[in-house]
Image (cartoon, rainbow, N blue to C red; front, side, top):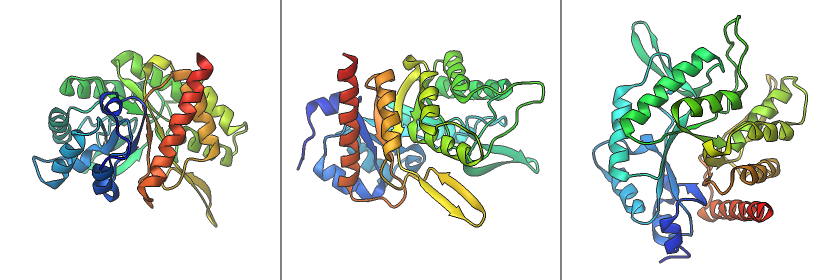
Length: 305
């Protein structure tokens, strides 16, 4: 039984969607709430068959689907894992998603004469050398998939130095150059920008974290932005210090909503995702967050009219 899905939702992947996690598989398929799209983690659906692919195909009959990956290691100087890329290409061919994305990060390298994978999203330096590596890998993904790809900015908890004779690029400039050189789109995670700004303040950098985020957004070309992510984060403080973690385990905070409103004012009504991956709540909590994002986006668009 449907509780609000319309033909417009089925036809238009713009608007607001949610990250579709296992806890909500059955309920979403039964209720068919009014969402513009569902986003899933690509790696959860690798393979040639089985229950995961069957349930994703069922959802694909109702909603547009976006594939969001965590394992391509796009910033790796060791290159891409061709098995991983082949699995992604097979999934894209079968599901025909509206968008495909991964992160501006690395996880893959060589150690002891063999390839190793860190199973994490590790940051890359914002250097020209790292940009060359990222561009080459993103272009290879786009060539293999035969479609435009999206790359997400990272929440990072350490920074890597650039060569001593080179000045590091600002993150927004780095990603803008990536989009310009490869033709890819940017997936702007607003919460990640804010988490990084909070951690920078903890580490002694001055300035208002919210204003830092607004300046970051203003440095990005609106035409490059293909999707926005929203999520919650947590503050951890113990004897070893304090840190803010992008854990996707709570509601979006007021400051991130403020930054999001600036983003949709600047970028227009790009697709927006509510992410929630830890301590996953009842589906209605996610739908409430999605409704708020829709309302803020509508207010921003009326203000621009």
